[in-house]
Image (cartoon, rainbow, N blue to C red; front, side, top):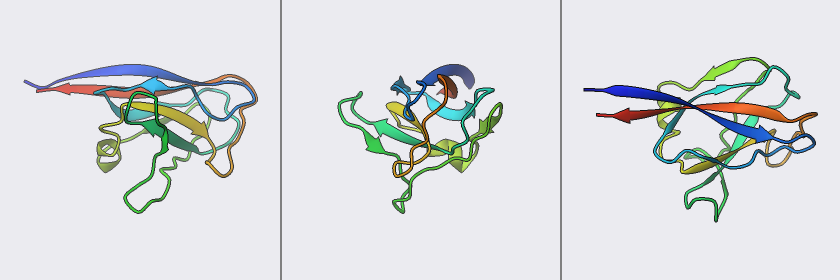
Length: 121
């Protein structure tokens, strides 16, 4: 039997900053991102912690390039197929507005909702 549980995990980026607080994913897999109705235009990049928040690292692909997602206000970004598989095994995550080199501060508090799924066989 295969069951799927969907969870909404808010990542808050405070006004005047570009990085959210940490969000614990644990065994959950990120499958989508729900963007707020108001958003200061910027792509999304991420920091992850394999050890529960003691160490933070930039999330990159196997070629060393930052994982960057184009984002717009009031949209739902579906992470499917290979994109979904790449999000497995992330213990904790922080969402960044912009890139590590060019962060974009948000003009007000923004909640980016991380949609996760748990799979149990």
